Length: 180
Ligand code: IMP
Image (cartoon, rainbow, N blue to C red):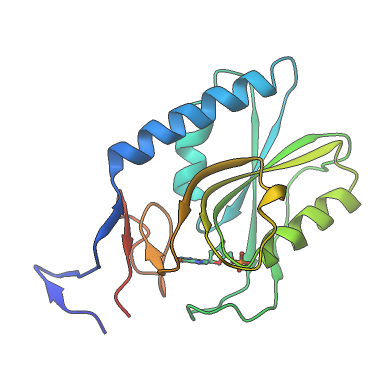
């Protein structure tokens, strides 16, 4: 258990500040708006971790967009992947013929992502692109699948800006190292 100070749990060093994140999200939004001009993209956020990023990202896109969410479970309360992805909540609307942008908090092994890409392709999406706030360096994902990347991240487990460790840290406005 981490130490507590003033009733808040401690975390490690801040890796990405609130303003760094805001600036990157603004640029990603502008890039996506250019790429999807003339289309009505459907942004699919992967709960729970992507809820903060999704909220900021769609507001940085100067286009009409639609938004939906899926909830998956792959880690339980552990910080290591279990290798099992389960759909806890599916999309409201069919994705048939839609241009889907999958919004992920972090791509680690890429297991969650490949599962979702396949799921959406099978459901008949016209296109599926991925926008990930964070991509962890040196793990077993194929980064070429990820069109929009916020930041590459060293191996440390992180919390903040939607990301948690055992439900701790989602409401931190920055990304910080987690203390085990
Ligand atoms: P993957 O399937 O191994 O790519 O894992 C992706 C999912 O694991 C993310 O959507 C997060 O929910 C979770 N995850 C991976 N690394 C971290 C981390 O450093 N902090 C918090 N959650 C993480």
